[in-house]
Image (tube, rainbow, N blue to C red; front, top):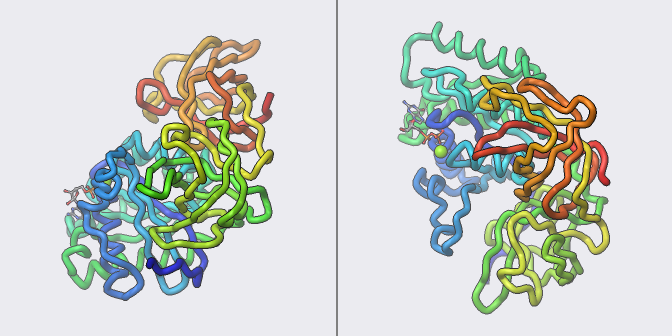
Length: 389
Ligand code: GDP
Ligand code: MG
């Protein structure tokens, strides 16, 4: 039988973010390699992260890869996204629940549009701690060039409300560390030390009623339907009754696992799989929410404060008006909504505005909840719920 999960160190969720091809996946693989050599992790090669074959084998497209590892002081779940759109869906909507992020910037290329967008959206959804990996530092001997890139990244962070002057910036080479080059292995260790010391243990809402946004649904032959995701708040135990909002299902949790290890109890911040009693595979979908019975009320209507991305941030170049119908990414849900901009009636790119939204279907909502606004496959806004109803 499988070994049970034993909680010996505090658990945090982190992830790599940054422009495509700046080396996020390579660095993720390198981190697992360095820690495997230290004996506190298992090496996960590049191909396994980039293609997530376990999920592919089950015929499910899940564009998110989780790896787990430990440093001397902490247990981490680390997410790496293959593409920009996946980043937006999973991280920006809060599905990945990042306690901190590693911003990967190629020292050869400097900040690029997705670098800026990820920082902006991380700020919007409350990722308060960013550590910078200036990657591909093996590719140049021009220290002044790398200094300039570092300055540019610090300025970008400051402009978005991060303490750009004091954020740790570590020059690394994921590729050379992966190859076992001691100089660059040391650079990845330095990066991990920076994450350990700079990203604080977040406050976990353990006393709040249990809530888990469903990221994925799987069938385990002979056992039933399993939902996976990161627990947003509260604690869940095997045998607990839960509601599946969106599916209108009441059920009981009959099994719990984290990274393939069974557990009796899981808590806010944990990435888990929940086995649900008597629930049909097609009754539950990504975007649904599993919660303690009666603890949340789904709604269609809410008011929000929304930042409309400027064109140079990858957003729209033209204003939006009342009657606009974009997609709202709320937790893991993707729902169309009608926008009412009130007496002002329009919102220009680069502005922060208040709006009322009428969603196409009910989802659990509450003040303070962050979301992304998307249109034609790109992010055009980032917002926060002010009031429901
Ligand atoms: P991602 O899109 O951000 O996940 O980037 P990848 O990890 O897929 O890397 C993109 C390309 O950059 C690949 O060809 C890598 O081999 C290369 N690369 C990644 N890290 C480094 C590095 O540290 N140094 C150099 N020279 N190349 C790297
Ligand atoms: Mg990648």
